[in-house]
Image (cartoon, rainbow, N blue to C red; front, top):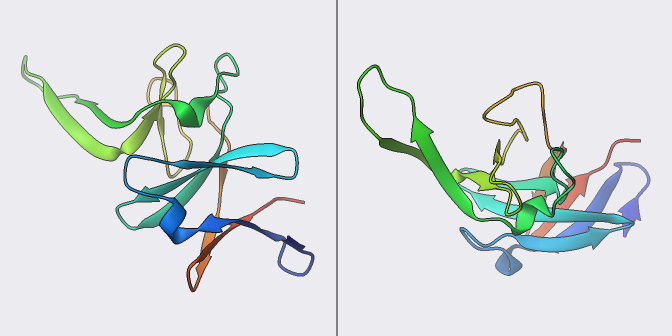
Length: 123
């Protein structure tokens, strides 16, 4: 239910979301992924800005970190969502694409009240 004064919409209960397993919810006409992350929860539109794939249904993962040596360093575990269609990676919290920072998935502010998760929708 939408609250007109705060523009928040109920998404799900905290027990519905686990690490590495986002909960996909419908809020009005929007499909939104709710994620448990290291410092709380995050929400992202379930649409990849690359080719409109179901972004939040891809794996929650980390990514390779750039170094000044020829090595593979896995970094940011649990902070990245990888689109299942083409493998594009996005920061779960901000929606920023790791390859091109101008490309963003839509992220929503999240509020937790007791054991319920609400997302903030723009007007």
